[in-house]
Image (cartoon, rainbow, N blue to C red; front, side):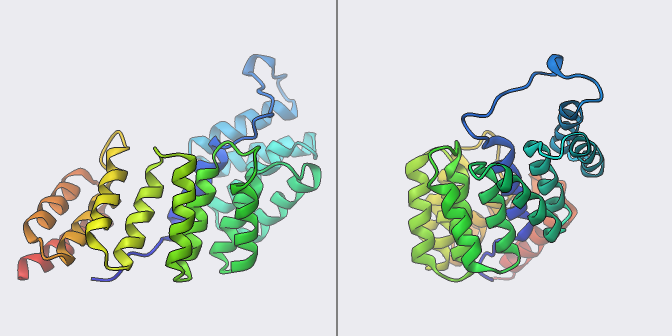
Amino acid sequence: MKNPKIKSYLIVLLALISILTGCKKKDVVTYPWQLKPGSAEFFLDQGLFHLNSGQIDMAEKKLLRAIEKKPSLKEALNGLGIVYMYKREFDKAIKYFKRVLNIDPTFIDVYNSLGLIYIELDKYEPAKENLLIAANSDDYSTPENSFVNLAMLEIKHNKLNSAMRYVEKGIYKNRGFAPLYNLQGVIFENQKNYNEAIYSYKKALSLLTEDDITILINIGRVYSKMGEKGKALDTLEKALSKTVNTKIKDVIRKMIKELNKG
């Protein structure tokens, strides 16, 4: 079986987790009852609601209305950057994120976002530089996200020792962050250190409130590489029973079929 790869859609998902939960500590909260209908803040609130709900086109419309009213509203500009990351219109996303930084160079979320875009564009140096700014900022409330992204960048470029260093730095920041242990498992697996990979994947799973299908697949794949056919089948069958995604089901069925050939 092939070694695990970091999918681009997972990178974008991590970007959204980071951006929507990693606001600067000094940001001011605006409550809905303080919003004047038709104001820039009103459209911003609506746009972010639609963005969190996955209604990307509607979010784009509302956020564009917000910056029509107030071109310097950095939260709306940042939201539009996220919208265009979703749409994979990276040139537009970069434009809006840079507008945020022109207004406020300490808006740390943007550095993480730019780093993710540059990973997607296969621009190693700017990706790393932006992610390091976010990871090492005292004003960023979730630096573990940037350490995840730094590790993914290094894995993509087959720099496994460097990737592990960033994973360990992220774990030091947040020992309860499952994606870090999952990436640790990916690194161990690529190094053919299968026992450690299993331990890391299971640690990641233990930190979640419900089973993650990707991690279950990872565990099943490693058990298969170890020759633990029974454990591999048990894990993959569990993953199959818990997903409704047709494409993922097909992947799992193929893995089970290959195991049953032996």
